[in-house]
Image 1: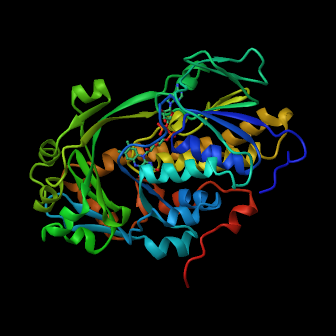
Image 2: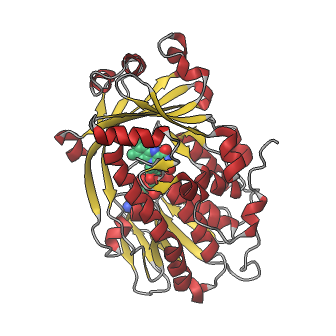
Image 3: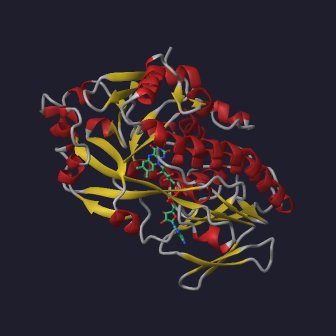
Length: 427
Ligand code: FAD
């Protein structure tokens, strides 16, 4: 993609946080010719050992960044999304994915190991042969202060006293964003009352047991609905692992500590009385199960101040009940790059305002819908649950009240170049 700055000095951007949102933004900005520094607090860049799904709205962005070949090497493609009932595993809803998504939304629905997806983004950021200036990735760089004395050159100050001035500062530093606090944005953090067990179960154990073999016979994205809790699972790395997320009421300990190590036994015990196949599956987890308290942010239209703006969980952390947190951060990244990619220094504030205008309402609707799904998924057995199941059985496309059609179409992008990378499915 051509940069409007190719003949002059391009804009400099500091991105605080090298998670999936921060790296997608860094790559998208690089491709527009902007000079990007990423400051990451961790000693090494990486992601946790867990799975992640990108629905077509996010896959489209990743493909648009030229990552198709690299993603095809690490993705697993589910053929359908299946919703099951907790007690007997009966199917209450089925949404086609696979070819259907590529044909309808011109982008796939894919599953990955988070570390693989993160590595693909990181490699593309620093690829010396890629288009645009190579991204400067700095680890061990925890941002502890901002100096905005010169409003046009915000400075990120790290714990070791180093200072990074740039034309734009983006806080992509997650749900407990320091940049957000330092820029004086309102406290929107909320505790949901739920926690998520996460585990990667070895695929060979799943394949070897007749009680769980069905999970490898057809790759699917599965959600089991039960009173007060639900369970999500899908295969990643072509069957190497079954990724499991079990959402249940939170304990006081997890609420306080945010992340706590757990065990296969505790995971099985969290789903008492559920279909026998659930215990057969969860009982194969190794003891590297973890528990995460589920915090989210209240919808908030204030994502920017002058030349500083927020992206991803820092501004719209949501419950994972639409599997959209990182995907919405990727949409942020694409829109941010479109807006910053067409201005000079004088236009930065206007560009950031346009970014927020195009993204805040959309992401806010996904935040709200994710929160509503907490009640929708967890209905006790009874008339409301029966009405929900009937809705899903009739092929309702989506959950709560945003449709998959709206969600998977994503925020409209202006750039015709993105279309050139769009997924050409096999006819
Ligand atoms: P983060 O991933 O939190 O990254 C922030 C980065 O900033 C981190 O690397 C951190 O170390 C760094 N940082 C923090 N503070 C500082 C500082 N002061 N200075 C420098 N660096 C700092 N989303 C999907 O799209 N699909 C899914 O399938 C999905 N499944 C999920 C399942 C579960 C159980 C959960 C909990 C979430 C799920 N999500 C999913 C949501 C997704 O994980 C998050 O929305 C996404 O990872 C947020 O990305 P981010 O880059 O905004 O923040």
